[in-house]
Length: 405
Image (cartoon, rainbow, N blue to C red; front, side, top):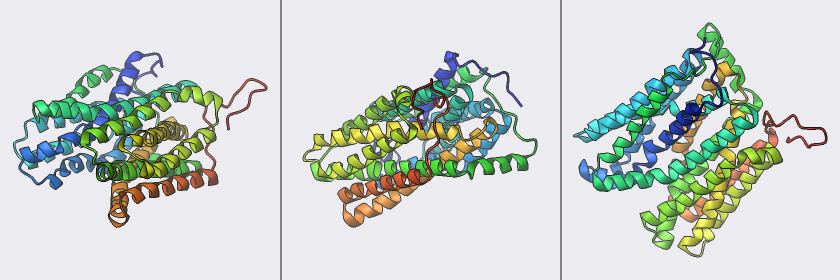
């Protein structure tokens, strides 16, 4: 069941589409965070209710990600990618013309429905097209694009909002040239089992493997740390401890994104020298050092080193775990497995603020940040109990070379 013959890994349009999708996944939320106070004023709502604009975008993911993975496996990546890009652009454009808060939320939900499959498709397409070292390098560059997008999109959204509140919602229109570029790419549609029951059975067998469950668990813990101690507690800590402004916090968080991008961009080289185990445990050490040292910072700008350490951990961990996960599934179940991974990311984005926000209220934001290191320890214990698989493409070495296990 193929859209058309497998593409060549040298096709630059594939990279354009993959990196474009990656950047779009950062825009839906991060580009609007600086705009929430202005949007609350524009639509005459209480500032604390403005988070509904974020929730309306995020919630459709729980509904659309699972079927998107199934559809991408059974009917082709492109047949899911193109409608998703068009919905993303349409929802964003609709927000520009919303006259009431309800209309705005409806359009945001449409945009979120389009965004939901994108987070699983870019990693799936990378795994479809590239293998071995090339796959690892592209996944690392994709992590760098995520870091840069996360760092730059809040500034872009805030700058556009200063001109007009509608303009940040024009950013999703960038999905249209991506859809045009992807319209005739021969993205693969692997030959799935004939019946849905057989397909779901094979997905279950793949997802229930011990190493696969470990990798999915690491995804859940990783994004709980990100959304809890960092996104939820760090801004409160910086504001209360050092009277940091939104601009100050944005600059410091950008250090994490840039460090993450730097680490991710070097993964292809690092995979040749170190084992997956070594790289993963290095990322855990970065997490622990960062989360334990942030509360001890003597001044505002002394927060940059620990935040950058956290970014290095993210840059090593996320592309590594994602790449290993793509290698656990055959082509015909890969999108469904990445859908499970995407669902766990969304779940973590809800668990992190709930758990660590409550902890910050009870103990203070500094202690809540430090408590995040316990999740990093849990990651290490999980990976130690079930050793990470080796990276495919790095197992066969010349005689005398150490095998990176």
